[in-house]
Image (cartoon, rainbow, N blue to C red; front, side, top):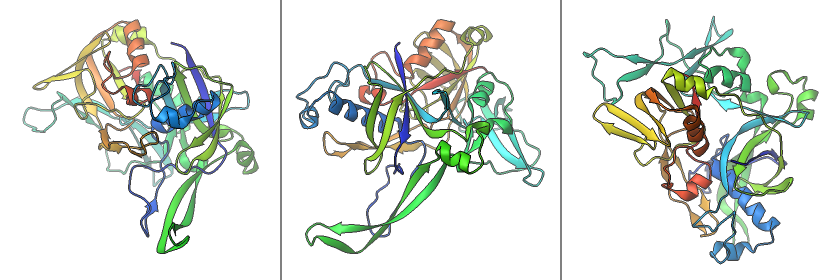
Length: 395
């Protein structure tokens, strides 16, 4: 699979809203990082249409069928296979950052002076304990004292490699959101198109994201330790399309400017042969999971408490899962001029433990490349937008 890696560098403050209604008087438009992968997919496809000289209006009506970009209803070979927060090094390489997966707990100890990272592990429960879970094990965090998990922390590439290899992660593998971006909150006034003036009583607040730049970081005294001295942006990997060296994008809400340039990126190593030999693994969602059976991934079938997984040559039994509260994704369909349907997804970072694994190194690599989609994708448009991507780790 021919993969092209891009670094999306924001030129302006980004407006990365979710799917909540926004625009009423007194409303607050919060942003979240990273946005859905469909944001990157839409921005890249729109920029490529302009770059190739296609009329966007005709393309929106389905009158143009590009071999790579397809049509609004039937995407071509273009597909986003990676979208995540990242840093750009001075040597032109990218260092990805990963949100803490659901099987890691980060807390403070010693009166808040130290950060402790602990792994959440499957645990068999006694028959006397009754739960609504259909898995044979529960994800349990054993801790001597109650504590509140920390948020706003990101794993470095080294920390992610440690976690995938089932090795310990520590505070040195973490970067705080405060070192990566600042919030830019602005007051706006709605306009009355008929009266051609500001609408009465229609003040609203929007939240922007100002990513840190390398010059600013060095001016503030950051020397690049843990990656905070580099430019902050998004790493996006795409397949099935020929790209120029650089593209100017309209990215996120209000079409803020961003520059997408090709970049060198080395995938964190995964020992698929060792995982296949061990007979068990973890499936970690790298992007939101859009599944027909709610939290159960594509390829999973339930027979009472027996959850079987069979997809792209990888077979096993799902014995445990930790899936956070469902999220809802939507978006705006520019071609049709209306919002996309709201759909529930399993959040990024959800973890599924597989035992009785029957797979080869090649089939595991194939599953990671294809994502959690059937041979004939349940939703070809959402697949092209980058949903249901996974990373396979040791267990």
